[in-house]
Image 1 (cartoon, one colour):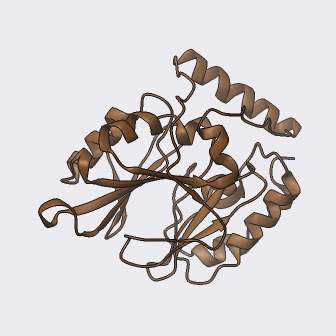
Image 2 (cartoon, rainbow, N blue to C red):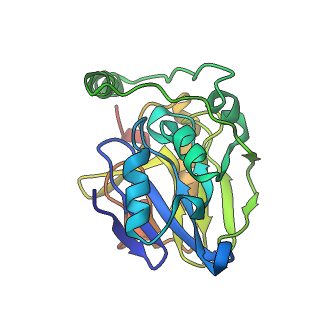
Length: 247
C-alpha cells in the first residue's frame, strides 16, 4: 500500500474504509531520531500495513510517540490496540469517547437518514464479508478536551471538540502548517466537501462542520474518507452545504 505525501511532514495511508495519517515529529527520540504520530488506525487488521508504511518512511515501531484517535468508530480505532502494543505509543482521544474506546460502554447508535441507512448497511455488510473483527479495547492514556494543545509536534496542535458525530469526536488544527485533521465531520466526494454521515446528532454535527469550515489558516484538510483537500481548501469548505447532505 502506497503512502501519499501531503506536506513535508504528513503522509496519507489510504484504506478502503478510514484512512490513516502518519505525521513525522521533530527529533528528540532515541539517538536523535525523529518521532512519528499516527492519526487514527484503520479497521482491525490494519496494523501490519501501517507499520510497513512507517518503515517505508524510515521509521521503526518504537519511533511512534503518539496515536491520536479522532473518535471511537471501528474504522478509526480498529487497530489501535495492536499498534499501541507494537509501538508503546501514548494513545490520545476525546474524553467523552474514551469509555467506548476502552470497551467500558457500548458505542452509541447513530440516528440515520434514509440515505445513510443504505450506506451503513452496505459498509457493515462489506466489513462482515471481509471478516473484519470489532476493535479490541485499548487504554486511552490522555483524554482530550476542547482547547487542549498537543505537545511534541514542533508547533501548536489545537484540539477542537466536534460534537455530533460521536459524543467525543475531536479535530486537530495546525495553524502554522495550515493543516486540519477534521475526523469524520468532513469527508469529500465528487470534488466537494461533505458532512460525514451516520451521526448521533445531525444538527450538532452540522454546527461542528461549520465551526471547522470557518477556521482560518487551513490549506490541507486530511479527511478520513475521500481524497484529502490540498487545493482551494477555504473555498471548498465555504461552498459546502452540510445541511442538505445525506437527505
